[in-house]
Length: 383
Image 1 (cartoon, one colour):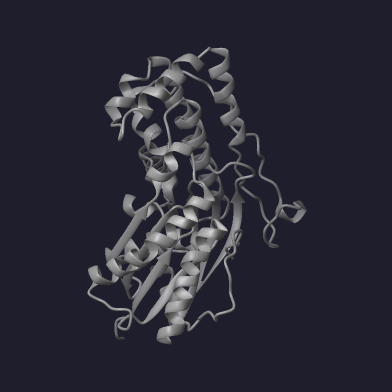
Image 2: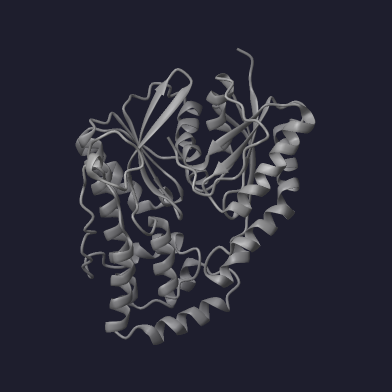
């Protein structure tokens, strides 16, 4: 079969990304423009600013992706774009541009669910390694700043289907990392900072109770996303965030937190040493204990779901999948259960367009093309 070159476009949140992927298994180019510096002063993503920055960045990002790949708009076989979930204004920028390209050049246009893209980031890199023998049933934990989901994935020919068996009831895991980091004066985004600081603290110093969400039978649950019966494995992280806040208040940490926040704000690009010199032992222990509790909850519930469904393969993907302790714990505990676990590389853990182009390839083979009448879906469900 001749090679198929797909240009992927991703703009669901605060990264403007474009990539060219060959036949769903080889990244030819992958360009990402991050808006982190713009949103840092606000402690999180500001939707209106994000969409405006996408408008400025999308044309040069796409042109660079094509140039890096040695391709042109005309030489690509199809365009793929994230339809949702995400920020509506941000999604619309990528969708409008992809529609214009497809219409002007009379090329196929493929819509991709952002969450499916994260799953295909793992598949993409395994194919690049020559691993085409992944066994089913496959369970994927998609864990990021905006999402914490468990999906059972099946493949029939070129058609992939997904069944949601777990999701967060409140904060996503990555959101909890960011909010706790902000609470402790560590800035935004907080997940990578906590990951680097945690090894310097005692993870047993502060006891956080496990989340109290119980597995429920979806046949009796009004919150079920899909009809099939069986237990759910939902997550909840608002409680641990509140527990950190109470610890800060009862131990009178506010003065040191405010001093740390001001000191770090005065540094253009703080290094890990800058954080360490401004964190006392108590703060480092709190950070380490928080991360340990998060990692234990994610691994415990995911592996319980894997056992309940006799899973043969486990994927852990999304931005939080870049966390060192999370990877180490999954590798250790999944091995004890005899389940192989796969992660994307760290560059493909966070939002990118290579995963969108890769997820579009089986849709291209199935000729599952979009018309011009679709729009952004901020709450798009993966199924």
